[in-house]
Length: 141
Image (cartoon, rainbow, N blue to C red; front, side, top):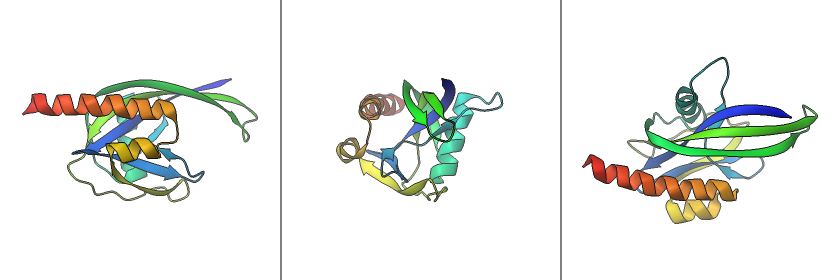
């Protein structure tokens, strides 16, 4: 099995979170593979910028998830291990940066986003991250 370390962002702007819809119609969070000794936080920020055009800042770590799938192109199973970061965007501006991989995106209210997200572990991640984001935002005041 091929194991890939990845990093991604749960990007909030106020009471909304950013989601992408991929070419399979799945609603997901921005993420990417860590390569060449890059740091996970740098990869997470880079993927958010490349996939969504958002210049966010990291507020905190959010946790880790992993999933397995069979790669038809590689002809073997793959396990993606993802380190997530809670991020803040100063506004709700975005641009889909990789039109071949993503068909749409946007900032959604939390209930709407949880209803849209395809995978249950991402729903849990979003729920926990939003609670942490609100707590950290209150502490900063």
